Image (cartoon, rainbow, N blue to C red; front, side, top):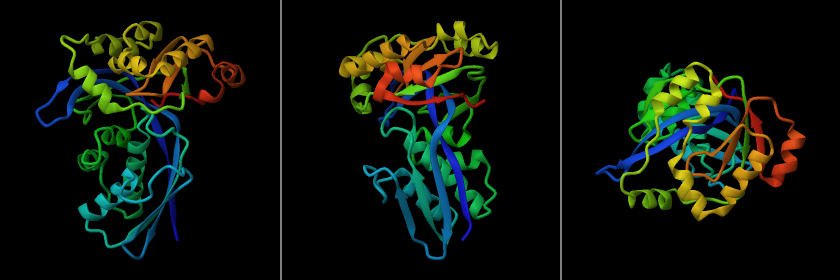
Length: 283
């Protein structure tokens, strides 16, 4: 039985602005998104029956339709009338429900692997049209490169991302309700929206100190009020020597950008059990 495998990379948000709630209940956003070279390992093999088998090392993850990766396999089966099934294993490293698109990147990996295993020959763009049915972050995870995400996150424009730096990921071990954060933002009038153009211009010129001035996550203020552990973690990252710190997505994962390679031992001294990984940006 042939086995196919790939790394499902985590994403971070270099900026995230919620523009407003749509009539369909979703929210329009504007976000500069960046993939990092840290993630889960997804392994897939083809079965003769049409069964979808999912296993994982994470005991708190569902292994049925409650898992977005399982639903991705089912969606590929139905969309392309595949008579075969799949055996999927996810070796989790990305914290769960943590603002790093861990579920979405697993789903994207499953779609890529089925595309390869079944010789479907579909482009990333074709897969993205299908993937958005699973979740707004899935198209970006399929693309896997720096992008400006608009709409609900499905409209992607290729951009220059981070370069020549290191990213320390840290998680305080708490989960934040994305719905709660959106609800709090819905109640605000005239929310402060950042300047994505200025951020993208600085990134294009590889001027990271200038880029830092324009990196902002609207959700961070709400999340830190709800979860003080996030504020404490941001302080720890700064003390560890990060040149810029912020929260990713709706949290609770935070990250520090280091212009010089940090010592893992030194970083762990400040972060303790909150430490997740030291990663590099994917261009």
